[in-house]
Length: 322
Image (cartoon, rainbow, N blue to C red; front, side, top):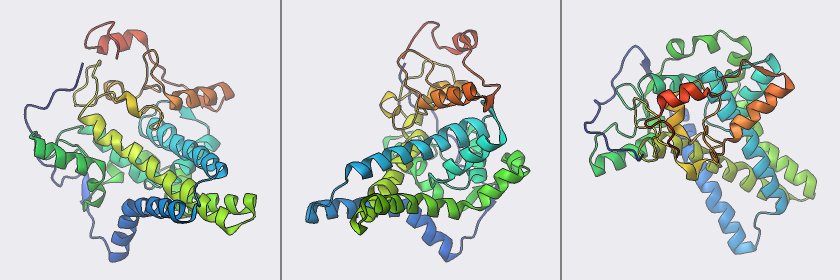
């Protein structure tokens, strides 16, 4: 069942007790633009080096990129999203800290702010108060196009920021997570420096360090960013909707591998605390597999696995499949 266009435009988000206004100093604006534009510049530099000097990605660069993509990406999907935002399972203290650090190394923001934004999104999904709904400006083709840009990246530059005291008081009270969140710049530095250090040490050359930095550092972050951002934008405009949800969230199979299962977004919005998003046959969800491994190791408990009866109650047509 494909996603229909909304028949009305939700009102524009406005300042509430759930948000606070931020007057950003110049240095923060510079950092924000580096966050959004820097990985694109890195990709251009990497391609230019490969074209002009034949210095393309080596097998080491590709291996490091894939490993770090999986490590930091699952830190977001398993840690920031399914554990910290929705409580889809419980984790012991070392696993909680490890997932918070891994997710921070994805360079998508401090864990507490990421979680606060996402809880606010679910509280107002595709309606007033949603920080990144693509339907923010209306339902015409032009409005939706503008909304897609907003939902994908534009909302990062908004001066109205989610109040973590309202949406993430549990994490603010968790000393481990609060400390990891404050140390976000350190995790960013490690995420960028680690591939360069490994590339240099394993090849014994400065060229190896540079190409590893560009491909396993900057380009890896670029791909991960846009895979995550696409869940906010693309998955709220298009895709199949076999489950009943109160918003426009859809399943987009093409994004399943890169998003590590997050693009089965319709089921997620129909049953947000479910530990598995790809619940039907052939729906790849590596994040659910990782949670299962943690459960088998005894590090994760009280996992909220899909319940067939609950899923059938939420299906648009019982027995239908994507």
